[in-house]
Amino acid sequence: MINLEKISQQLGFEEEEVQMLLDMFYESTTQSMQTLKNAIETLDFETIKQEAHSIKGSAANLMLDDIFNISKEIEDAAKDKLNINYNRIYSLLESSLHSLKEQEPVL
Image (cartoon, rainbow, N blue to C red):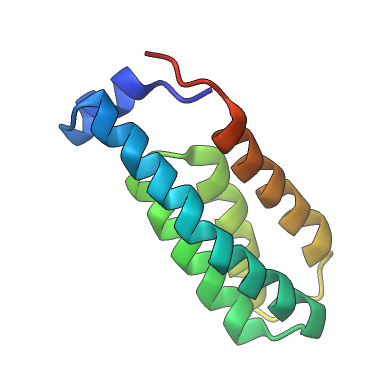
């Protein structure tokens, strides 16, 4: 559950501005997710690492801990070229992003 009041206080923005930032994050992450999915299909570790890093950084800036942690797990595994089930972790990330978009923010 996103607490807009808490995030806005931490970031020093109005709640409406935080909601706008969250919407922008979701929209920009959509392209990264498609690139990440394609990279996972081909086990392109460098691209997996780059896209996960990008998502992780944006999530950290907005205090989206679940998305940050999942992205970090993907990035760390790709950095070490580990042969893990990226599709499973990608699905978790995708689910977290959809939850972000679908939930009503707490004001």
